[in-house]
Length: 303
Image (cartoon, rainbow, N blue to C red; front, side, top):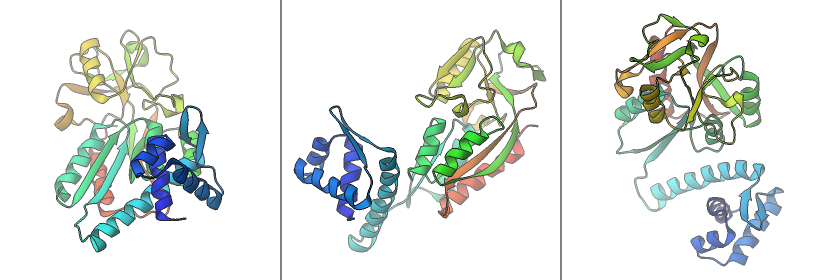
């Protein structure tokens, strides 16, 4: 297995086409196909599924490409520092469900480390993608929640993907809405009282199982339900339609503003928000600082 073969495989995975990858690499298509075939034979795995419509990664190929990216990126850092004598920036990336406090913690971490020596990335994304990003080394840390309903399914995935979940925050369930909502001044709200208002939920795409929902009580039969892709849209729907969503109750006014509130849901349900990392991989100083910033939100957890 050579570094060139790893680069070839990554390029094919990105292009989803052998011809397009060959053009990008400035080599002939037969030479590229031969190199990929030799790599597959050497490791004893089929990395790519070839059809008339193009090329896609097999499940084994997705895992392999995740490791290959890490090897190539590490080599590029070594080359930049010791061969090209460049001052390469260290990288840190996190993937998270749609939590404002996770973004706020990221902001504080970036402020403290600065951007002269570091390159940062944050991905607010779907639940399964958070898991995939950590599995494939796209992100060092993933932020998501588990509860009694989804725990067994998610922990099975964590085990299969060689991931570890560590608890950070233990939360009750709250109704998140804008302060102009007719029920916003209540001390507590029952689900039945919310029936006439649209429940807002984050779209999970092809992995739309109840177990991957970002909102607890995902199996409840809501009378009115609207799905959206991003947090800004959900906030607009809260104001425009008196919509609501279910959340941890952690308010982050410094980013979302002071127009929203969290009201306790009449339920004994609990959720555990934590972080996901690869087994056996040490957390970087940036990752440790990020988790430290998130841990500060323990003081904001409502009971």
